[in-house]
Structure formats: structure tokens, C-alpha cells
Image 1 (cartoon, one colour):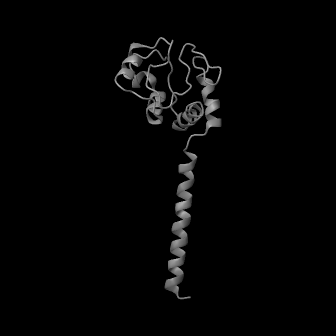
Image 2: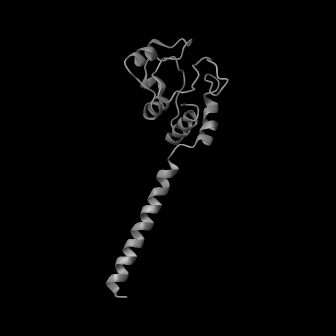
Amino acid sequence: MKRRDAWVLFSAATATAAALVMAVPAAAQEGNAEDGAEVFKKCRACHDVGPEAKNKVGPTLNNIVGRKAGTIEGFSYSEANKSAGSKGLVWTEDVLSKYLENPLAFMPGTKMAFAGLKDPQDRKDVIAFLKKHSQ
């Protein structure tokens, strides 16, 4: 094998290895529903999720991903939340992440008195957990 051919093989192998290494952090940044169940413990005082979920201080969070804001029957939402829903705010993963980072900054006037989840991975994990309870 010529030096040039060996260099091309070495370069290709190095590029492939680098691509694989770069892919690992991206996968690690996806949400983990099991870890999200742990993070959700911070939310349980006010929110419920699952087959027997009921409204508490906050609304149930079943089917939150993809739902329009302020639309759970029987829950008394803040005017800010109802207004956001009437203007078309839908709880996508991206919107939930921004809201969960700092609810009061995202939606001034919300009744959700929670400082937020500052760690982006915690937000991804709790959203992955909530997705398990969304259709």
C-alpha cells in the first residue's frame, strides 16, 4: 500500500471516529423519561399526571405536549394562561422548555409560583416524562 493510500484510509477512519464521538453528546442531551420522573417530583405538589390524575393547585399534565394553553376543563387558569391559549399558544417541547426555565418570565401573570428548572437537561428529561403521558 502506498503512503498516500494509507493516509486516505487513516483520514477517513479518523473522520468517522470523530463523527461518532460528536454524536454521543447529542444523544446524551435527549430527554430521559426515567430521569424526568425524578425531576417531576418537584412538580408533584401542584401537578398530577397518570391514569388517576386530578387537578390540584395546578392542572393535570396528561396530554400537555401538543395541547393548547389554558384548556383543561374544570381548572381555574390565570388570565395570562387563558389569554395565551386564546392567542394560539400550544405546549410544544420547545415552548414547554422555555416556560419551565422561568415560568414568570415566559408568561407574566401566570399563577405558577415556581422558580423554574434552570438545567436544560432537567427540562428535557421532565418533558420526556410528560410525553409518556401525552397522546
